[in-house]
Image 1: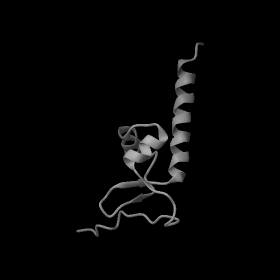
Image 2: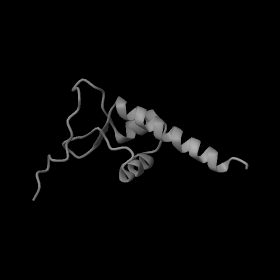
Image 3: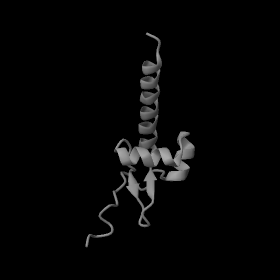
Image 4: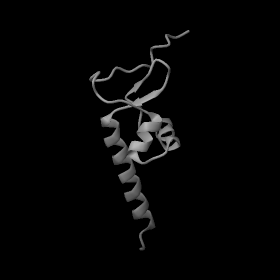
Length: 83
């Protein structure tokens, strides 16, 4: 049996804002399902996990989502561009 707190990641600062997945999705303009998908793929892991197991995101994660969405858009644009 493993320690239930082994999955909890420390945050750089206790005063840093943290959002649950739903609030974070609203802030970034993506869906909760998209964030779960990015987590499964390893593209975006939450900065922390609460005692209850909720994913918690920080401002650093906002930047990461913006990069992922931008690169996804660029890739789609390049693939759909006329040749």
